[in-house]
Length: 107
Image (cartoon, rainbow, N blue to C red; front, side, top):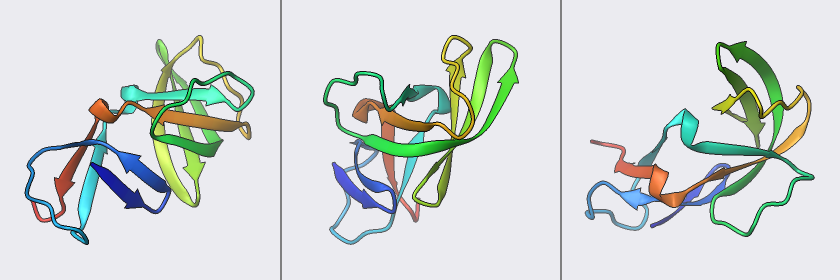
């Protein structure tokens, strides 16, 4: 299902198939299911590509936690330490539609 959000259109899977056009929904994505790339890296065409900027980078054990700003919204992304992107860098985020679950907001 395609959903229009404040950061762009997203495609995800429905928890239930009882939506109507105009319904308010919530999107759930596990932080480790978001892929992060510098804008100079090659990305084959996919759904759910978002352009943002790294605001915060924190090392936590074997992971790096990034706070990414996309059109005024903040998104938290966990990545392995070999994905080492500096603060202030423009990035692209991708999410596999199978990893993005759509719920009705009232559920």
